[in-house]
Amino acid sequence: EDKVVQSPLSLVVHEGDTVTLNCSYEVTNFRSLLWYKQEKKAPTFLFMLTSSGIEKKSGRLSSILDKKELFSILNITATQTGDSAIYLCAVFTSGTYKYIFGTGTRLKVLA
Amino acid sequence: DVKVTQSSRYLVKRTGEKVFLECVQDMDHENMFWYRQDPGLGLRLIYFSYDVKMKEKGDIPEGYSVSREKKERFSLILESASTNQTSMYLCASTPSGTSPLHFGNGTRLTVT
Image (cartoon, rainbow over all chains, first blue to last red; front, side, top):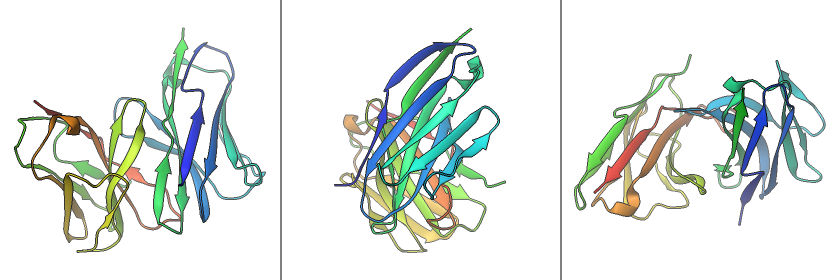
């Protein structure tokens, strides 16, 4: 059965800290891995990764994929209170044409 | 910018009622999805559609049905609502599997 596992489930840090969120997967016919940020409403897209070892970066956020070890990390440096959210990881599988989500990591950044 | 609109932000229904959740996207996307989101369980796929009048069961289709009569609209139907269907429902669309999902703002459904 295809599955995506995120860790930790929740995290509390102080402003300025650096955090690393983890996403591991076991799926057939992997095509891509996606990261989303969810605050009060719709998840918003952060990154899509398809190739191993190539870092994607946007401001203080970055992400990388390891297709050999079947995981991805999302790094947030110099965290701010506005980074408080649920971070979702999803994997798209071309066999079943599904986006499979992990349970998410709830991040709280304290001022 | 892609816009995915869900018709209701909050909905309260009684057990046994038939419930319709509507989703409309404005970017001519082929693929549309319905998920439910519950604490500790993440997003679980209920149904998806890759073309008009086409539908595929997701991981938890029991108690739900869908309708896609027009490309831009994907409706989720709870034939007879039950309390265990109290949840956040998220609709999403994408032009293809090589593209990200675009989500609506969600409908928080409470069944009493």
